[in-house]
Length: 233
View (cartoon, rainbow, N blue to C red):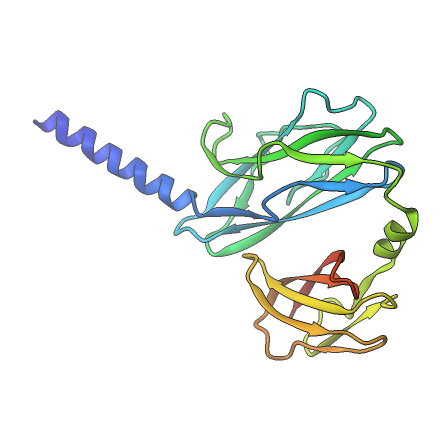
């Protein structure tokens, strides 16, 4: 009877710990991308911990079996930027994701002139053995490098900048000729509001809480040009 009770207690404690850790999320939730094969693409990933306890984060990148040898990825977590095609964290350097906080990871994707399509996924674990999965992006997300993605659209996206950033009252958009609308999201992916944009115009954010936001910049055809990060202070 005592042994049975002990087992139940252990199971309950483990379930509680798993529940707390299960509130770790990644935004965006998929690494789907279509890019020009001769340019570099950057994934800006926001990790959020809405659980009741701090979590050590260990990561691993999973690539499709057909991921070309010429393609390169560079992972930058909260500790350091790793060498090209290092797909598993140095387990001596976990990332501490505190409760009710966010953290930014970046994955740089270099097609190196190789036209192809493959898959890419990021998995997060809370243990150095990489057994306790706490969050992951979509499995088998398609990544395509294709020269038919025009340099003009890529160049336009690269030139877009928010300033000042961080900002406390308002922000402007540099090289905003083709921007028609700005959609503001919080780190959980919830839309805060949508605003129309006119060339040289500013956007008032004085009413927003301090923290990190994502801005989707759309053209007149409602096509996404670029997603940018904004720090509200």
